[in-house]
Amino acid sequence: MMSSDNKEATNGAISLGLGALLLAVLYGGGEVRDKASGKDYLINASFDRIDGISIGSDVHLGGIKIGVVDGQALDKGYRAVLTLKIDSNVKLPTDTSAAIHTNGLFGSKYIVIEPGGEKENMVAGDEISFTQGSVIVSELLDLIISQGKANRAKQADEAKGSE
Image (cartoon, rainbow, N blue to C red; front, side, top):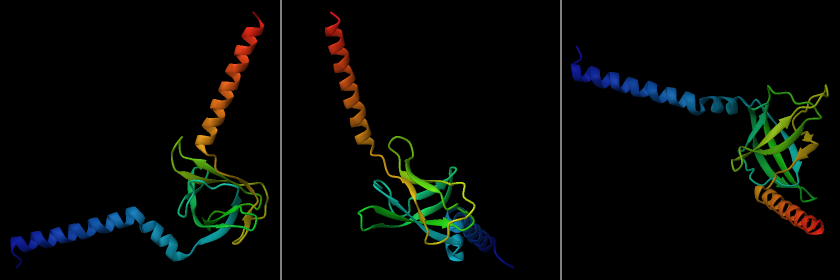
């Protein structure tokens, strides 16, 4: 017969083991399973700018993560080419488009996929033809400020002319 201390130690060890197993399944077990099964395919997308995008950045369709950025390179025309690893359960039409979006004003960046209307689907190695690169928030703010200053100067000139 086991003593009370041995039973408590055994129960504690089993509880810790089950807790660790539960955490492993909840926080990454699904991703490990998906990668091990090899059920992803790679497609490419060329952008003028990919500021804020790195390997591992998310790829979304309809607000749902369908893949990740798997690689980055420059083509002969100095455009940034991203390799996207897409879940094989997601079939993308050949006229699909891709854009770089920001999560909030200063949040992380990710790729948004918009499927087209073609009946034929992309296969591994295909390239997304329609892309929109990254918008730099500081450049956008500079543009807004300069337009505001120009409008103020124009209004001041009009006010002087009407006097």
